Image (cartoon, rainbow, N blue to C red; front, side, top):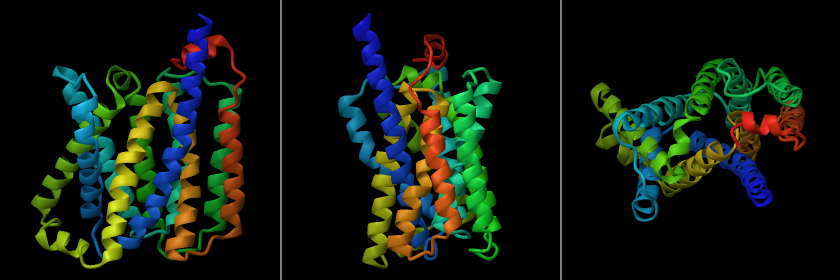
Length: 312
């Protein structure tokens, strides 16, 4: 019994680490997306991101994983793929055509608050004071950073709204997948999400005339563009999504979602190194609040009843 409890706690710790590493990597991806956004339309960027990620993970899933979704579950997983990896990631790419990588990362940090609200409303999680304080502090940090940085990009509110919409979709996904995700290996689940998302966007792009051979030719126009797209696909898709879904399988939605507060940290790193964006004092203060929220939400003091409610 003690060994089982110890193993469960170890998995929860690893899941918490994965939930921090994945959003940080995703944040750096925002800088790469911003880098190519001026030359490639958001729909094409998203299709390439999902397609490359699927190409990396599919062979691994076929060799090492067993238990693919069938019947009703198959269509549920496909629907989640279209929702999260199609619509949500398209909104992310579109938002970065209007706003900075730093602001985009900060806005992605609204996910913990929305995830907690959905999880508590659907009784998927119990609201504790530590979770409430952690998410509240992190959200205040987001609000402060955006308020202080409001004039950074004229007209950037369009990108802010798109990123907020993407975060809303991601919050719904975090809670809605809670039951089905535990029935399948993360490697299989992420592949079954990436492929439908890429196919859905490919159909949309073909029907609207947005995606064509000419748009993909723009990707190869420069070596830096190719490297950015490969980074977006391999790190920002295959690596990030696998870690994210693995974490969702082994801990509660809110504890995974709070890891998204590391997203702006990765975005700031990419913005400073790749894009030479100016990082304001308000952003740094906001990040300090976000870090405090992460620590509060993942604090280890909790009773057994809470652990059971969190599904561990």
